[in-house]
Image 1 (spheres, helix red, strand yellow):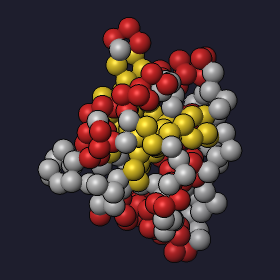
Image 2 (image 1 turned 90 degrees about the vertical axis):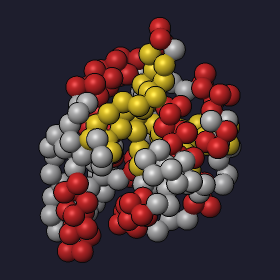
Image 3 (image 1 turned 180 degrees about the horizontal axis):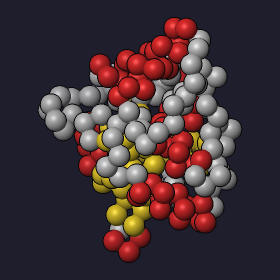
Image 4 (image 1 turned 45 degrees about the vertical axis):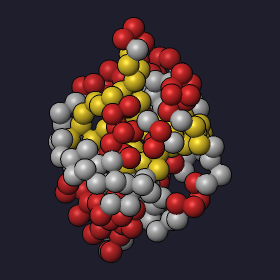
Amino acid sequence: MANLDELNHIPKVQYPLLRDTIEAGDLLFYAGDDDISMLIREVTKSIWSHIGIIFKIENLDRILLLESVESFGVRLIPISRYIKGVGEDMEQNEAKPNARLVIARHTKLTEAHIRALINFGLDQIAQPYDLEEIRRIMQRIRTGEGKAVRDRAYMCSELVFECFDAVGLGFEYNPLGFISPQDIWASEDVKVIAEIEHTEA
């Protein structure tokens, strides 16, 4: 499993200072050390355990995160609330001091892409989380066999893949037949913006 120390070269910026530079279509990468995050990181040999896409509603001055999570499926959540929840688990009231959040940007994303991506993403809200895909990934890693199943149940990285693929900016699947946050992170079209100092949110 990759070590979080690999992120130490990325500049850390408090969210209020970073907020105006965030753009619609930006990617939010999450690295946690809770049990589920560690399982995902171990299985995918990744720094990252979660990923989402940032939406901006300019006329309401709102920044939202489109993500797929185990307990809800696909949802939109205010990014400020998400950042607060990374500092402290909102459901279990447990501190998560080692969690890391990084904003990155797809360098080929245009305004036309963003509009289409948002429309596609909004159509996915309330689709279920793909719990079965974790089992399929582990099976493919063990056997080296099997193909990706593309459906409308999404792990977080599958949701991001499908949104970008829908506008012609797909990411490369892992050779073992799945897409993980690490596979998206590794794309030459993804550029790091900053790490969020979530403890200050």
